[in-house]
Length: 300
Image (cartoon, rainbow, N blue to C red):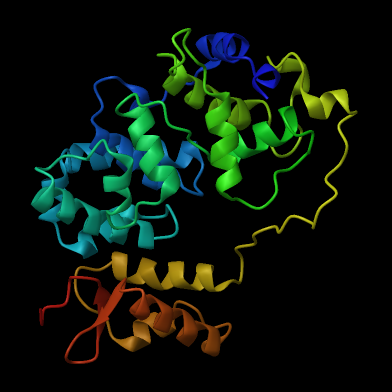
């Protein structure tokens, strides 16, 4: 497996093509990097840069966010999508401030015990913030490994095998341990998938991999189940976003009529979306029956 993605070639390419992303600044704290990783989940880099800069300015340490009402955090989340991420990050900030001396822990297992932190995020922070040689596997890395190592156009379902594959690729030192370049190699694989080995129209002519199995086999098309294309228009996700837009646009609770006007196409769908926002804890009902963002009820 190691010869399919040689560290020297991958790192040499990364030295030239690494994007100048603000969270890659060595001055960034682990908290700043954690914010970026939460924002980047299912959201393009271009949409994250400006909100990230505002968040690290406004909440430079976890306690600053912990002292802010959850509704304000949701309001600042804006149009990034999947707003439960913001609520979970707010919960995480409270735990970091209360139990971890206002710092993000370096240990992967400890990070996994925090609200909203999964396998990918814990390892990404350990790797990119603390320089640990741990496998970091996102969609881009899975695709690079699927093609270069296994000869498949698209990866299969996510699983523990992905971590094993990525760990086996980390560069080793002559002493037998991991090389100091291992964390940078993880970032390079991710960048390669984002910029060159893309899901659609991969730029194989610009790829630094000298012996990609998929290319050597003639770039066979995906033979598994068809990939699901996530639509947005007309979905419950869109309706939830419209309802949240109403609440983000006001400093006071609103009556049900204001929310009803946000989506008149399908009243049953609107009711279902509103119920899901209440269940997820993103929206609250005041004692007098009005609606507001989490933590902004005057009755609390």
